[in-house]
Length: 451
Image 1 (tube, one colour):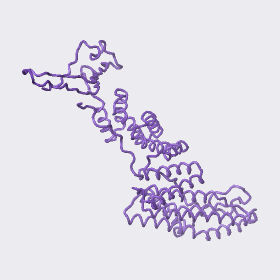
Image 2 (spheres, one colour):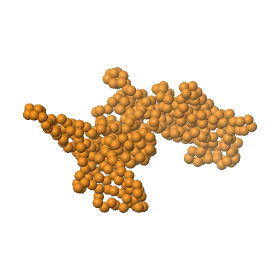
Image 3 (cartoon, rainbow, N blue to C red):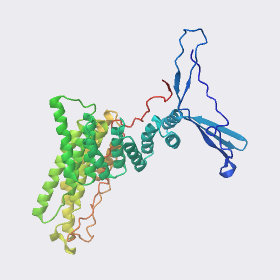
Image 4 (cartoon, rainbow, N blue to C red):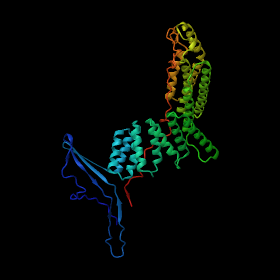
């Protein structure tokens, strides 16, 4: 015969009774010290009351979690709360799901403090990092994931914790530490094909933001070498092509940055070489952006299409910013300088028209597909500015530099663009468009069990 367990609290036991003297909290609030009720295991056994020969029942062993009880007094009202690790974890998870992030942080931290050895505490440590991410507290998130990795190196969640650490450091603009995390990940033996493509791409993003374009390009080429190997061997299939699209976009960004970095210098022989190199990098960036569009990811495609238009805008601005030739300096050359600017503007009009067509194509394509991203919005803004520049309202002329203004022909520094298009090029971002890797960690079921 099995006996139901009965838990009796011995009031004489110091382990289970409240402190004899309650501590007075600030503002007249009474607080009773928490009583920790620990019943790690106890046995109940019953023997048969029947005659000889009847089998004796086996002992029943129960494992029970520690339970914490707190009592607080507000005036005449006393509030009692009792919870174990599982209850706290469920409270935290509910708060997290409802985006009550401060409550979630409080429950997770209390769980880790009161039930440090429980399975839930390990999951709580991981989830603390996610809560900080959702609040945009990237440095705090990185610190929590570091603690998780250090405390639980054998956890099945440690790989994802490394990814979350690298992502958090990148969002905090700590590019070198972020890259080091992804280098560590790339050396792991348990990466899936998607893991490897993501780690390589994120490492390349870090090198790009450190202005190490050569290393960034080398790492991105590794991505596509790995892709081709998978296609030849058929050893594993990629579940998503998001990071392939992003890697292709980053190749475009590298050529884009190189094009912008090419200076335009006189004399004419040097200017010709500089313009050729700038145009070569521009066309390479355009080709790479088009390849990124072909992957079909809406966010990556709309960003790549936006950058194609931006390429031509920036080329126009860079050429218009070049000072006039030195032989057009002096107050007696005001008219010649004005003619030079007009002719230059007319020759570059085709560049602005290409920029306009690029943005219009972007807008038309994604509106037809019903896709709305921030890059589609940016294309709308760029279209308005380019149209006003190319087709000024009747009676109004496009902005012209003042021909009476002092010449900067002998100034070694490039002049500000006389006709800026007004569109700045945002840097690439890795955000919510990426495949989800942020599922909260979960403990292995309730701790209560019968052995």
